[in-house]
Image (tube, rainbow, N blue to C red; front, side, top):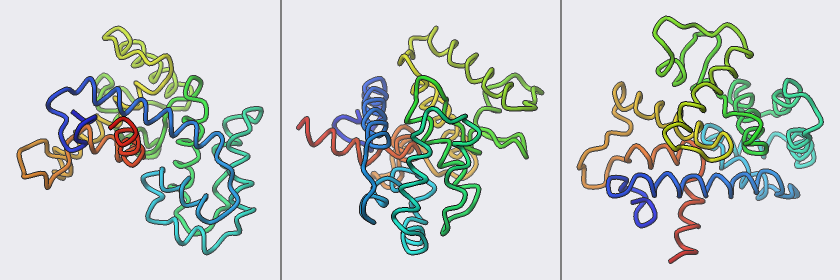
Length: 226
């Protein structure tokens, strides 16, 4: 049960999912409100983005704090169209363009989880028609554009709500699609094999929390509740 041990999801997976959801709320609050005035602030923000963590140091070294803060504020500006906000980070130096675009979409999702679903290329890659979304769609279905993508998101969300995974926003869908991605990696790379391995291998829900960028936040929640 993740509330007691993040490496063990076998005891009570429902409680583990609820802990992940609470950590996502904390992440949303930080991404909405964290003031960016130092390198430490930048590192705190980008360390919550799984695929940017390896680039945090180079981002800090190659950009001014003012430039990064300006990009973050653009992401926070809900008056701007989605298409403009998702490009907010591409001028940031020190990371791959694809990672920066994914980071923008992830931050938008966490800033407005009731409006925008989580979309990164490991959920759906339009160039390759790959990602966890394709694992749960009807075989042979190919998404052609963003409108079809968001329609698919909403259809799956409705199904999840039917089975009581109803968070009132897109958090539940995010957890489900990241979990599907992690399970796929289990089958292909053994990244998250849910076996007895003396704690050496992460469990599926633990890896889900890591990919969602909330694992450290969960530790903080557990510490506060201990």
